[in-house]
Length: 113
Length: 110
Image 1 (cartoon, rainbow over the protein chains, first blue to last red):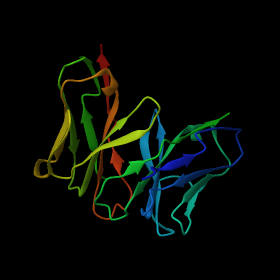
Image 2: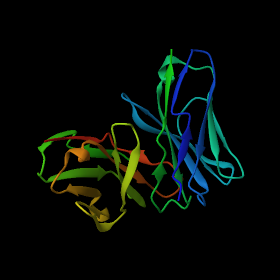
Image 3: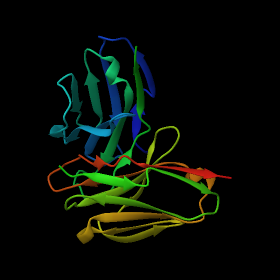
């Protein structure tokens, strides 16, 4: 079966712009979680969506938002980009029950200049 | 919140050597996973192992939930095993929020 698909793979944006990242989970998976990875902070949880509802949110400013569509595909949006938003953004697909493994996509590497 | 500590932070091995990576966590968990991050950044799920022992080829993992630690064993290491190994835990109500350790960076030399 197809894996988790994240697009785009690479992105360069200017400070102040906004960006939208996409994640298509494994077929049948209803949960999509988003993570930010930076050298300084490591892997940090952004938010999780299950059946189009945000169930959990990490400690990030409101500039970071997301949504999930009826086909379980998810998007995350970052508005008013800052240099510190440069990171690898990873999404994870799971059943949503919390008791099985997660499958991650290849990530989107965002560079803010 | 739950703390996850991994050791050692760095490990250099010769090809063919065995190694043990450790993950300690500070509270009860209902989800524990080991991942390997390859040089291109992708996280590959190695094991879902909130308790017990599992084996997959040259890799095996053991979690002793009552003592709050997990071990990842790599036998007969290969250069392709190089990368960063992460332990991540989830707890009741965390819903999607896996808490990651800082990782163990493994370098396997030919």
